[in-house]
Image 1: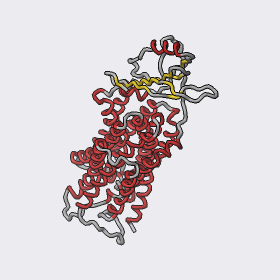
Image 2: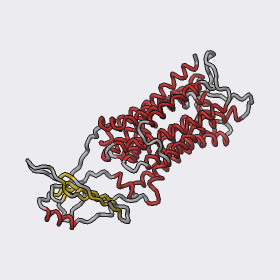
Image 3: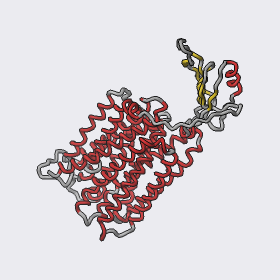
Image 4: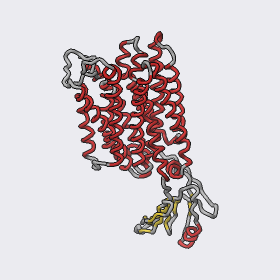
Length: 483
């Protein structure tokens, strides 16, 4: 196998030639030419990082604005303490349903349409959320909450479409591009946490700082939209985004005729793609344009073998689901309730403890875990990785016995020092980013290349299922805490 100066691969491999009745199958020489462009200056890689930021930024912006929503919902004490649980369910249940629909029917709607529609809708809804910051909602707190819940639902439905399409696209690329999306998601969470802290630091109160906080999300999503529009202009991205739906059928009954055609073929480098399988003595279906102008265009829209793909990715798919089940069962519904055990009453304990120790520390740890996964992929075996994912369940009782408030009199606090909580959060974040990234990176590689897009989308769907189940289970954890 060789590669030209432009990064195009040329290889030969044997294939079974067409046999007549009564003949034994024999091998014929096959030429496989695949013009796979290079990602020059890693532009596509960094665009995928940016798109990864856009996938989880909407969710992170809502759950990280803890102080803002507590002030907005001050009139309703029940909502003030439990709004994050409602946000989690409102986000994850529609997310799961939309992801399921996206997985089943993605082949009926073009990728470009799905991606652009979801990005535009999310951007518009964050403009609405930013505008509501300036509106006095104290007299209609419940209605404000309902509007916010509807916004969360629609935003996460669009996020599911966007995320599913993105993982499907990167599933067809080398696995480091899936790692780029996972890294971008970590950056998105860290950005949301830092933006919240900066807004609290710069504003006189949580509500006045909310405008700059949510407006920053509008800016980032708009940049994601522009960069995705530019993506098809890049040769490397176009190679994977354009499905091989147009094919040319050549019926060559003898070696001389087909050899003549082979000699006359020209590579169309402007399109950045030439892919063919050529048998030297049999009827062959290829993906190129012949110079004689006689073409038969065949367009296909086949339904992927979902059950077969699921069985192949099930160990890692269920593992990534469990990783994020544990995450949403604990964060933020339980972890944001944990108060500092310090007796001092200052800005750290009253204003910054939760934004820093809970949200920032988790997202920084998650980002670190994703970065490590993009550099070192260990373990590589499929058996050890699911075990490590399952062990992560220990974090639920660890946080449960920290100083989470309010809590029932019969539920003791076993970890009376803030250091325990800080260490737990850091390990919690790192394990989430690292294990989740490994599962998502390995998953599409377990199936045939033609099914890698569907496998990537199904892995993302199982991730969302884990988030949805974890969000639902967070209500159980909250109820147990109050016993």
